[in-house]
Amino acid sequence: NEESSGSGEGKLTIGTEATFAPFELMEGDKIVGFDADLLDAIMKEAGLDYEYKNTGWDPMLVGVEDETLQAGMAGITITDERKESYDFSAPYFEATQVIAVPEGSDIQSAEDLSGLKVGVQNGTTGDEAAQKLVGKNSSDLSKYDSSAATMMALQNGDVEAVVTDIAVAQHYVKNNPDANLTLIEDEDNFEKEYYGVLLPKDSEHKEKIDEAIQTIMENGTYEEIYQEWFEG
Ligand code: ARG
Image (tube, rainbow, N blue to C red; front, side, top):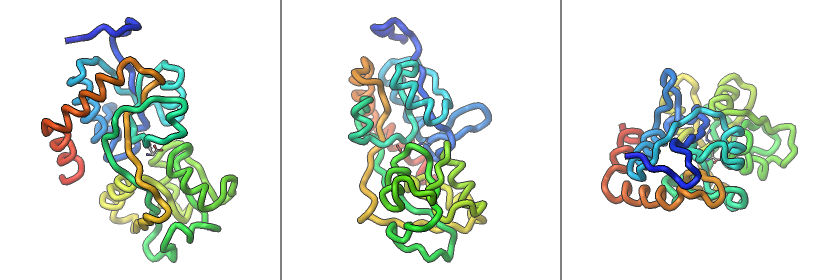
């Protein structure tokens, strides 16, 4: 049941950064996760044919902006700044930032980060949040290209803390008990965030994608996918 879109391309290419479990991770050469399942449900509902590609974070952002990619699905927070260059689908997940530290660390709130070596994924909302706390050009801020690299740096002791999305940090702590990490939440310093599908400005697919998200949220499909990845 394929649709030919206005610009004539049959298949949408959708980018991601697939080291962000449980949203997107590689299983062999397949991208799996909450986002992968949700995206599949959305695109089926919308009647759109697509290919989901592990492009990496920066290439995804560049690709959606220059429209060599037709979307990005990567736990991407809807922000005012990004809205200047992109469109977003309706929100599909609530998030916030959290600080991951080794067990026994003295850090108790976001304010304690100042002066410490902090790791973030470059160009994320965690990066922005950390910059506010340690200073924009602080040499204490280490930026990594992928989400996995930040957690690796924390485990290796290259950084003393990581600022990242709460569900990803919780998943990591749960699945890596030997890493001995604790999470620090701080609602005063970390705002609520909402994930959306990243789209080029004036994307011709936005309306269909939004309708599909609404349908999936109403007909139980969203709940099923949520259960599979978050309550399992
Ligand atoms: N939610 C954060 C942001 O939009 C982090 C997303 C990182 N996603 C990923 N697949 N590595 O900036």
